[in-house]
Image (cartoon, rainbow, N blue to C red):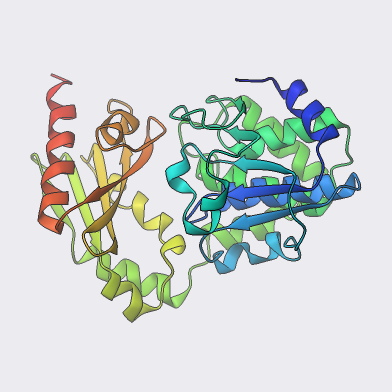
Length: 317
């Protein structure tokens, strides 16, 4: 069942020994949400820890530092997870056992007993901010850092269409609380590792155009990631590149994840619903940014996703 922010805060007030789940291939929003909530709960005197399936990107390690633990959880909370498919092997023991899901994805499958969902939020950290305010917990600078990170990474530093007036007001409150906004902005938007630069250069060599230049596609292989030393979780920025090209309405990035398994990331303009395209393959996300997984050969994955993209463009006529 869906619950309100006030009901979510009341649930957390009574909860004990809380395990917070973050989605596989972690980004700034899931780590920021999980770390911020964990720190706030610990401030209340509760035992809380986070669990992530995949390695945390280097840029986000500081947020999650010291937030592990060995206690057996009594309460399971997920943050920024729309579907149990995003759990991964490490989180698999908690399938069907989530007590509370906090999320902003309109494609959320309501897998948890309780769901605090607000698709109008630019990031799940916006909802964590509202919960902390409802709990009347002091917003310490280290918590504000976590929440600000999730907010700017999911909103493209307030450039994406999911940004709202509330996003800016929350950002202002986080800055007033002492978050290191200058350093965080520089780290995520003005700093790239050599491995990421090498991966972007190679990915651009794979660039393809389809449907009279209205669709652009990039491919990232496992071999390329191994050669450049880049982590998959560091490649979120690459997914935005195809859509930035003039005339492109649908940007597609295909990442090889294993034998006959490909992760598809879509970024679209205002006229195309990325989430609707990805739902054809069991995925989801947001209207302008979504993802899915396709099994089969690379050629089959390309054919399927390009076919769905072409259909979406045809429906615009």
